[in-house]
Image (tube, rainbow, N blue to C red; front, side):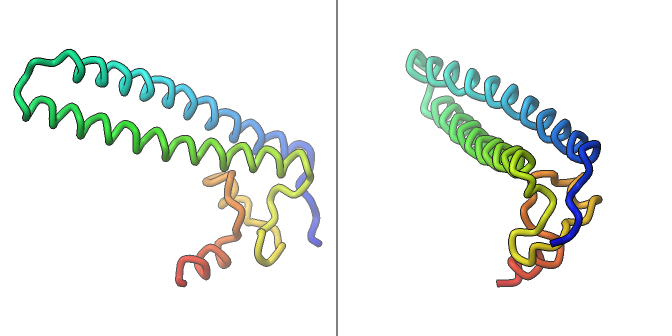
Length: 122
């Protein structure tokens, strides 16, 4: 297997992941609050059906965003576990190192660019 990341490099990626995780969980909190308040508004609304429909669409959009962000947090948590296990930075498919620019852009990735392209082509 190729050379593992240095402790300094690992710290940089851990910090990137933790920063992104903190931003996402903060965003999830505000979306969750928005969904709750929209639900309360809808329950007490005496508006017409168009108003209620608009609230319903907005609530569905917020829930979809919450699910997407929850999935991203799960990927970040998995990347943090890979750092702890010494497996971070290696492709799950070919087991070669993932290029640093790719890790900097998407630090939770599990595939190198070639394997990602291959996965997307199927």
